[in-house]
Image 1 (cartoon, rainbow, N blue to C red):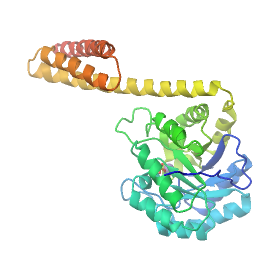
Image 2 (tube, rainbow, N blue to C red; image 1 turned 30 degrees about the vertical axis):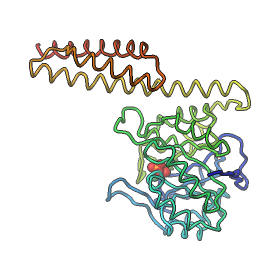
Image 3 (spheres, rainbow, N blue to C red; image 1 turned 90 degrees about the vertical axis):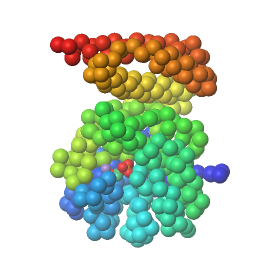
Image 4 (cartoon, rainbow, N blue to C red; image 1 turned 180 degrees about the vertical axis):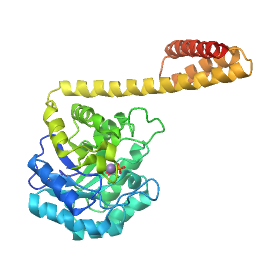
Length: 358
Ligand code: PEP
Ligand code: MN
């Protein structure tokens, strides 16, 4: 499906990078919303975010203040002049949000995964001209993400934007959601007109990661940032660990180095950042493989088995090198890499065995 995505054309917002959207994860009370919004407006933020309806992984958490909070966002518009944005997940949310004059809607990661839900939102928006930002689905599925843009586009919503908020993983060592930068980079290649925002708050899950992730997003030529900011982050009713005060946000934004994306070296930088991201993934996977290998060492020790199981080793080398060949990788190179990984696995298992002897 051909899409001619139009610029967001947000009134009063210039398109200079980064376009900043900031505000609390959730609207909690009128005071919290107004205090946060006023501080952000003083720092020059022009678009305010706040979740009114909150999709929660498990029941029992704060599921959002609901329609009660919409007049607070209206007040933010009137008193600060900021545009306001909120998440919608059902047709009812869409009707309520539009009725309350919300300027920008976004679709959350847990909704983007569900084509029925996205279609329901698209149908509810037929005939309306409102910009919609779509967060990536929780799973790293670019086609599903693009499918959501197509559903909205098909309903006549041509002012679209993407929000990269990272992908769910059981590996929560550094990030709450793995950035997998190659996915938004591929989205940019597929839909070059689509503005892409980075959500460092949900990727990082902790406030220390907000600044480096914002910088990485700028280095990858993202168009904007959507950052969770709360007047009293530690007391936030949702996502407390990842929210920053408006002061901290201002500090982070002022330190950002914005490189000129029109320079040809920007392409080279983008490719290098992609390589950096892939290396990080390789290392994460290697660390995981070593952990499993050590567990195997424990098993072998308990069952009095030798470390080296030659048939298994030969099988690994043969199968992986032909698998590599199918992926256009030189089989000798694949064998070399695997030999070296295997060597380190054996060394780790020897350590495990010796430790256990003590
Ligand atoms: C949010 O923006 O607060 C949110 C719920 O994010 P996500 O959909 O990315 O999890
Ligand atoms: Mn949140």
